[in-house]
Length: 83
Image (cartoon, rainbow, N blue to C red; front, side, top):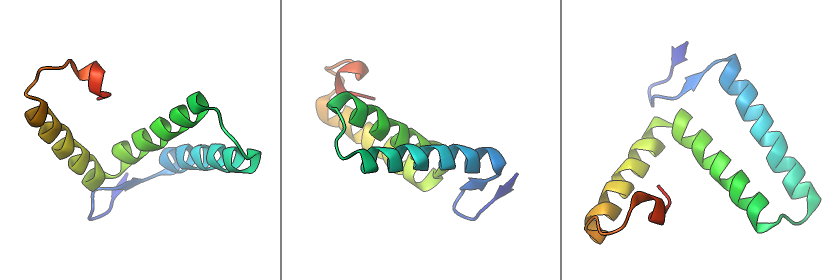
C-alpha cells in the first residue's frame, strides 16, 4: 500500500469505497430531497470516510473533540455530544 506525504492511502479497496460513496451522493443529489434520517446517515458516512482516509482531517477532528471535552468539563457523556 502506497502512502502519500499527507498520510492519505490509495489502493483498490479505498477507491472502491470512494466510488460507492460517490454514487450514493450522486443518487441523493439526483433524487432532489432526502429525509433528515437519510441525510444524516449519508453525512456521517462521508465524515467517517474522510476521517479514515485523510490523516490531517482526522487529527483536526481529534483536536476539536479534545477542546469540546475541555469546554464542557466532562459533565456530559460522550454519546450526548455525538462523538
